[in-house]
Length: 438
Image 1 (spheres, rainbow, N blue to C red):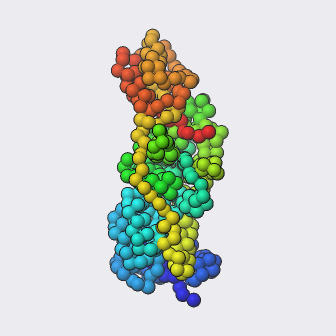
Image 2: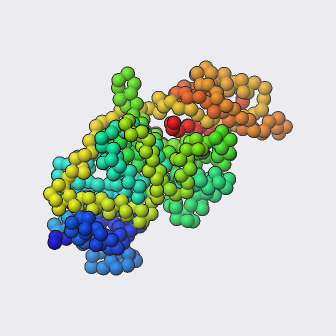
């Protein structure tokens, strides 16, 4: 029986999980593939670092050519992360006729369409289940289970670090800095957490999801992105008062205006109705709500990071591409991805309800001034709460308004007008969108 030989690029947290899973489940995987899987070579930066127990030292190399130029290796697994040198390695593997499995969402967000086209031309598979949602099978669901339907919308919690921080802030009233420090102490956040808490990681994942869900080919830098640094405990308090929970979301949906299709992609904190399932996904868990035109809503949830959850997705792709290669059906997975240049709706065209937190000086006419500026742009107030008032020291008070659905561009103009007219507003208005959930 022929053995399927694997070349592993990287052996950090995820790579180590892949090695463990393939070793521990060897007999089951051999049955599913139709041949044993063998880890032939593992590319690492530091050959002296402690690795997964049982990984023979003669399989470890610091020379990429030992993996990429070995004709006996059938499938290349890339778990290095980042754009370079990963992009060059993946291209070399594809051009040499090997299928590639990757967990690299940044690489796919920046170069996904061109890599898919390259793989299709070479007749090999490019599989990337582990790039979004760790062990959640969202890519497989979009590529296979929903292939007969048309996905119209998705909304997901796709960054466990941000979800953990917001959960701790809400449950224990922690300020952002304290919750972040705790996340770092527990290993949920990096020493430099910017990619997670500023929304970049979620934006990369949203671009990958949009490729499968909408066939969208969009530049990753064009996705509207906000992080969670500006969220304060008081926002969680007010959100709960109105019946909502604050979550950091990746949102995508198809829009048609005058018969012209565009896609709305945005990443930012948002308010979710507290009774919804997605609002109650806490800690480091991820969850993604998909909505099909025929199917309706479908929620996938689970562990979005970690060695074994992510390795489950990587190895599932390995099983698929290895089995396809043995049966002579390589490239089928890649051929199912159809991408087209897609118009990205500008953020000013977004329509939703809003949470507005004003810090104002408690003076006669202040509420009339704000309400007038909103009314001028047809932004209607649904509810309002004021905390404090009549402070003899002239300290600002908190005024929170929930609006009806409004156009973002109109809201921005209204807030700019409110800030200019009179000496009423002490600090810039804090704005949160209400997520588009039924």
